[in-house]
Image 1 (cartoon, rainbow, N blue to C red):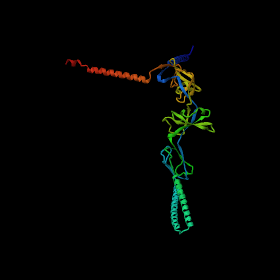
Image 2 (image 1 turned 135 degrees about the vertical axis):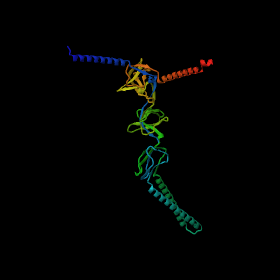
Image 3 (image 1 turned 180 degrees about the vertical axis):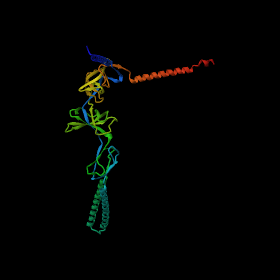
Image 4 (image 1 turned 30 degrees about the horizontal axis):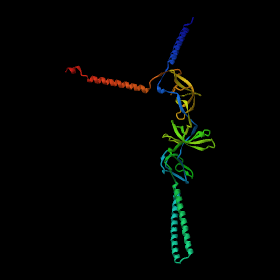
Length: 400
């Protein structure tokens, strides 16, 4: 005979087991009865589409118009007028170098040019006097020739002096770094007090409206790339697809990588605002017909790919095989697992259960429209009723 404590323990265990079994059966029945409500906007139909194909192109976004402004004289940087990212106009002063010595040279050259001009004027006057005296026979031919030589030497000295003035003035102008075209300062290289040697980079100016895609393609694919072909590519930092057109294919391959450079112009007004960003895309060298599936509908699990499809009123998790990606829309070609006419959910969720029942419901727009129409009809009916009651005379009024 069991002791009272063991009997009570056995009863408790049996009751808990019954409760656990009831809970499991309830959860099992609940999971079996899970339904998924779906609208027409939640799925799309698998069908044949044109699939663009072509070689992959990688590269960066670079401006066509860019200038590396360098020092043309050796001097101290006195002032920097512009910072990175500032908009500049053609001819704007960007930086100024110390021009003290160059202005002294200019003043000295101008003084030498004035002295040369005076010497020439004096030599010409002397020559004219000797010509007059020679006509009257009062001077020798040798004296006249010597005067002509002095005049010619004075002319040569004046030309040389003027050239030195021009050179000195150019040196003064070179102490002012100005913008060569309308653009943006992309990189400032110096600060006030720096020593600028000849050839030292001062600033970089780019034209943001002249950006283009400088890409590279493999030498094996260059035979199918031609000018005028469309290019779809993405730029690092931008969540959108850009479209371009091949302008030129470089006739020489890179000696190290054996890749060929391809220049691509942007098509349309959609362009990035920053240069130097990495870009990757595909050149549309051809197209073919294939079943396609949206990239957002794919579920990756290791090296396997799945989609959630609607079949016979149930939600099915199907394994599929995808091929190349369309460069224009981003869709993938379906190699196996789906057929034309299958319905696939656009946005799969981790809470979906394979075999769940699917219930089609009206879209939110249709529901709100029907609700609005019903409300308008009810309002109109109420208005008509109140209007008729107001127009009907009362019994007491008729009696009078």
